[in-house]
Amino acid sequence: MRIGLLGTGPWARMVHAPVLAAHGGLDFVGVWGRRADAAKELADQHGTRPYDDVDALLADVDAVAVALPPAVQAPLAERAARAGRHLLLDKPLSLTVDQGRAVVDAVRAAGVASVVFFTTRFQPETAEWIARQADEGGWFTARAEWLGAVFTGDSPFAASPWRREKGALWDVGPHALSVLLPVLGDVSRIAAAAHGPGDTVHLVLEHQGGTTSTATLSLTAPQAAAGAAVELRGTAGVTRLPETAEGATEALTRAADALLAAASGTPHPCDAAFALRVTEILAASQSLLDGTAQGVLDTP
Image (cartoon, rainbow, N blue to C red; front, side, top):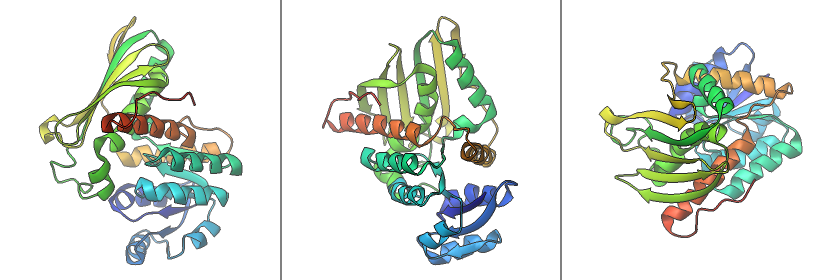
């Protein structure tokens, strides 16, 4: 599969470009970025071609991987899908429900494959745990904590304008939801949402099967307190999301494998439609935090 990369920031440099260049099933055709000099530099590092016109890149590929801020990703993903290109996207899909729905509509209309890179869903230990707990059922309650030190340490993402504006809800909230939803079912209502220190957000979620869960999300945790944890309690007892030493590079390689499989007719559950539902939940949570609406969600 011929694939191009949209984006030249830290995530593109650290993860996307190395994975696309090394993947045996992909032909890394080229890089487009909002800064032509950055696109040339990244393309040169990986022996591929820089593009200064996104449509020229789309004309030369079968698929695109996107490593851009969500407000930029969504319209470009819609454009690529309408051009008949498969999509390897990042989370969150978009920052508005309308933009996310436009991507899903374009994917469906063009009949292209989509995979959204929710990291935990592409790591073997965690993916297998999620599948087992979904099969087990009988869960009474759950808690998820996704605590990052992006704004308190020396993260390369600390200066990201969209993270500064939208905070942990939109950055690590998708990770927590990508674990909770397949195990507990869809969210029908955000029962409560409250701000904590810094950009920290606390959510209480009601799931359609009657289970409730809590989520604590932050990018301003002390470095010593950073980490992710999910605990489930139910008829089977207590179980916790296993830790994994595997990094984002290996996980994105599996996401690329999933895109190849989806393009051949085996869709992955982390597709654009799933990512849209995550966006709808985040948007409802944001409205509740802002005091502009209640956190009741429509059934998808």
